[in-house]
Image 1: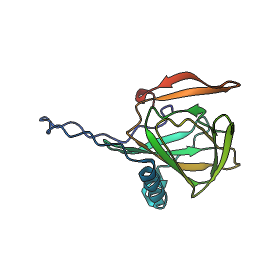
Image 2: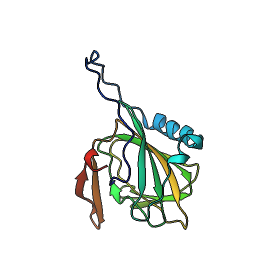
Image 3: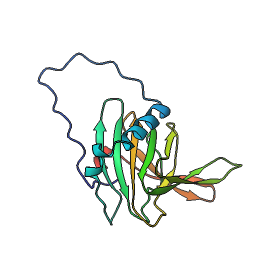
Length: 175
């Protein structure tokens, strides 16, 4: 991701720190799927934030909690993520408007899997998942994504004859 908008504001730390909170367990992919599906059904909570960018996908973080975060992303035709992971976070996304395509590797017997993801469809995945999401349709798309724990890094990959080859990594400072 590259910065197209400022992340949601984060409150400042109090002058006296509260007692240390116990680290929460990451939310499950199923819980994250439910979260994005329910949010997609409430467009009044997010539609006014949507912007379209002809240069790159546009995105905005809507929720920043200790145990998860939610992002809103818009896609014009031809825009894609390229193959990437989620830095060990579990995740889910749903197409709220439009249609996308997802590519992933299905293993030695399945090869490259291509899935059409129409509006109303949600996908959930574990911490090791690598995929490429793209808008191959003729109109824009809008998606909601949830990650737990919040993203700390994302690695990018090239698909080559021998499989995926890691090419770069980015962190929150690039979002």
